[in-house]
Length: 311
Image 1 (tube, rainbow, N blue to C red):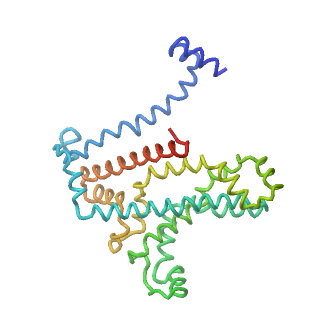
Image 2: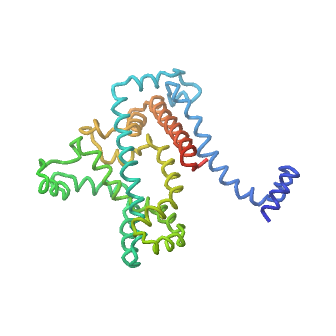
Image 3: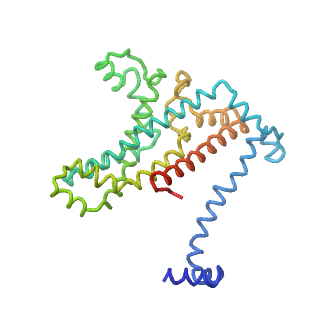
C-alpha cells in the first residue's frame, strides 16, 4: 500500500501525496516542532560568541566584538592544555572503551549457560542506571587516602598513600576505569543486538569444516556486525571533543586542573561561575564546529574505504 502511495505521489505531485498520507505527515508534526523549538531556535544564541554579551542589553543590544573571543581562546595560556586533556580523555575512551564493549558483547554471545549469561548482563547493565552523582561519590570515596582502591594500590604496587584525586597523574586512568564500570554493559547492548542477526547457517557450515569457536567469531560474527561497528565508530568520532562536563565537575578540583580540566568544563566555569557568556559561547561553538567536521570526515572515510556510512 505504501509503495503504491509513493508512486502515485511522484506522478501527481506532493499535494496528492499529502492527501493520500496526511495522517503520516500529521504524526511527524510533533517531532518537527520539537526540533525547531529546542534545537534550531536556540541556535540564535550563537550570536553571543561574537558579542560582549550583557543580559541587561539583550542579544541585539550588546556590543559586537567579532572574533575577539575566539582569538582570546586560541592565544590564551590554557588553550593547549584544554585541547590536550579533551583529546586525551576522548581518545582513551575511543581506543579502550569502544573495543572493550565489542569484545564484551562477543563474549556474552559465546556463553551458553542462559542463567549465568543473564546474571552477567544484569550486573553489567546496572551501573548505567545509577545516578552519575552516586557513581562519582563512590569513586571519590574509593580513591580517598583511606579508600579501598588506594589500599589496593598501596598494598600491591607500593605507591605513596594519598588521595588519588589530588594527583594529576591518576586522573585519566580513574576517569576511563570509572567510565568502563558504568557504561561497558550498556554500550554493548547494540552489539549484542547486532550479533543476534548474524547468520546461523554460516556458523553451522563453518563448524563441520573444523573452524574453532574463535575462528567462527573472527570470520563469521565480526564481519556480520562490522556495519554496526563502523556506524558507532563514526558517531564516536563526531563527539571526540564532546567530553561531558558533568562527570569532570564532580571529580576534579583545582589541584588537578592540569590534567582534568577539559573544554566543556572550562566553558561551564567561565559561563556560569564568571558570567563570561560571550567567551564561553565562542569556545562552545569552536567545540561544536570541530565535532561536526570530524563527523563528516569520518563518515566520508568510512564511505570510501568501508562502503558504510550513516548519511
